[in-house]
Picture 1 (cartoon, one colour):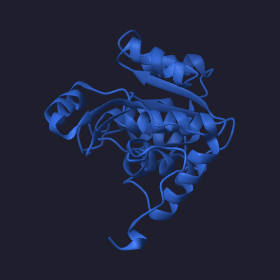
Picture 2 (cartoon, helix red, strand yellow):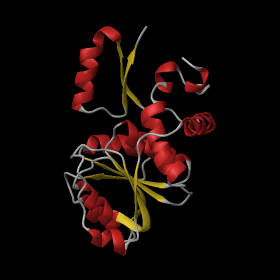
Picture 3 (cartoon, helix red, strand yellow):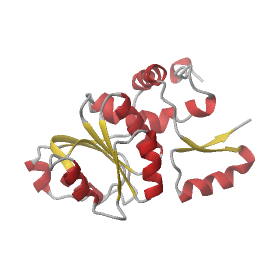
Length: 215
């Protein structure tokens, strides 16, 4: 491969951990830091406990943000709190937007990683703070986004589409990983001949990343 296609891996990670950075890690970094200019004291909301969500949690905490995580599993919410989340909301037990308003004194969230997509964007616009940002990353509920204009206009919110990120941002992330001693969350590692099992694990829903090791 051409040299300029590659980025040196963090010195502090093994190959499996480093492999999680160029997609999930970079996406969260690009949304929060490169585009979002996240500052200490800001609030960040992530949905779920997949790779992008947990990288978002870890990056935001390392930069001094207050992190809110919404999950459909109370057990995964507890694991997220152990990882550093300040608040875990079980969407099966309560309306998560109502919980956000309760926990923030009706202020809302500065940065939301919208990992669901479709009509779910409307809920994120309910939860975002005035002048806040919603980074659209996931499309689990469809590629057609749906939301009323009321919250968007009244809150003067920014909605930013995030693809992944560029090479220089990945280099910035690598430096941050080493400096902050960030450890990617790997739910399980599989050998190449276990690929079907690894894909089944992914379909069931992982806490962080699933890695297939080639050798």
